[in-house]
Length: 440
Ligand code: ACO
Image (tube, rainbow, N blue to C red; front, side, top):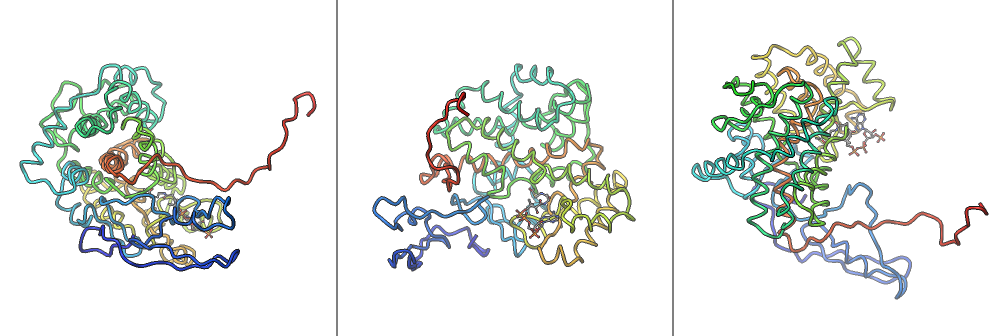
């Protein structure tokens, strides 16, 4: 984490070192400290004998392991700081558009007006997914979860564009990045409308990125669609808030899968799979289901007690990195008010606010530093906008796509990166002889 704000994360190496004595041998070692980290590979020099493998670090769930150096997003979870390429999320969410943020994440700098226009034109020019993928959606069971449809659609795209296997070629990478930015909202629209048995709606190049998402979900095929400007902006802000979050579960999945040099469509399909889970992006759906189950403000205290008793988790609360308020949740709380001015208040918001109030004042949550995360209120907004709860995580994926792609591209360009391959501590039986079936 290291960087405390102000300038881009430093690439300079310090002279610091860590001295340690191996209690098993009495041997002393000096490990270099660079950017607040020791190099885990240097631990391998610490051995009890010549043929010893060397020391490893054991870190389940990578809770304290930096697997890459990245210049994309900075988080300080203790101070509620989230910066994209050095820009505070609060400023970005107030002033930028989603495609501007995508350009920032992918290229490293805010685009000038002409550069942004060109980027938007390039995304638009990428067109629509091939017919084969459309047929796949038409053939899918309408009851299938839209995240499963999205995953299948993205994986199928990799097969449709075999040149995407040329991941070392920067021009090829860029054209696949543009396609993924253009196609993912179309796949989301197909998933949504397939579930409802409605004809698919084509994008309108005159509309914004968020406006087109609303059109492809809520519009009518062949007819013009005018999104409500407040809802269009609210959706754009939600996409911005979800655009990147450094080495979270889905992004590290995209990096890990992409490190095998598979095509980016397959890598982001794996990212969608990771995001789908209820402890990650699936939490926004889980929050709404939880609010539904709580039912009324009167039941909140008993529900919070059941979370404290360990029977369940308060969904939308807690975060691996934020040990203070998630800055995105603070922005979403204000955004919800603006959306409710258009849609009318979502009755579940009263239950959510009561849950938040009780939890934030309860020693169980205070001691564990559990605060609302980005997903606590986003579902209430999507529901007020009239979307099926199963679509919520798809919206998350739509926002996160540019972050996944920025990390994938950074990983491919990073000469220090290799195929991801963690070590393990073997805990199984010692070697033994095979016992024939008839003798067992
Ligand atoms: N409700 C109740 N207790 C919780 C919650 C919660 N939501 N989250 C953590 N805790 C408790 C744990 O039981 C544990 O208590 P203990 O020390 O008595 O055993 C302690 O807090 C620490 O929890 P961990 O599971 O170790 O924290 P971790 O960093 O591994 O988990 C996570 C983070 C997965 C986000 C967790 O807080 C959680 O499950 N939250 C609910 C799901 C959710 O909202 N996920 C979305 C995350 S944001 C995102 O992905 C976009």
